[in-house]
Image (tube, rainbow, N blue to C red; front, top):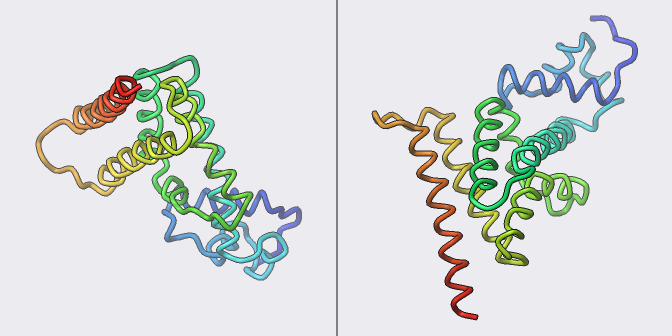
Length: 194
């Protein structure tokens, strides 16, 4: 195997992303990346600090892509329309990029840069919630509820977990409608309490 000149950290991350996209996250190893780049595995250590660091780099790049998709979906929308758009964009991303999406679920509060990047996909939802006058801890609870519900649905969908003869798209609409109704009911109760 000949060593490739011009190898960069970005090229290593690109190769890792390609592997995750085509073969899944479990296929991501330094040996597999080296083979894809036409280099020997030790050559990668000049560009990445091991497999865990490479997984981090892939997740960081994926956070940016997902945040861009969600931000675009929510742009110019508010209320239920924005929530539906965010849910649809998250579902589409997870279905189109299941391996990469799966790499975005881990929190790393001890890694400031990673923690900041992982918040980027949450920001569009927090912006939508501000339109409902939800802030602080309530916004975090609402965003987590939204993420958990949509994540659970798309994970089951990607794993072939919906086998009954009822439209999966209809079930997704039902889920999102109930998330919206729950949020609006909670807000209406809070407004009446004031």
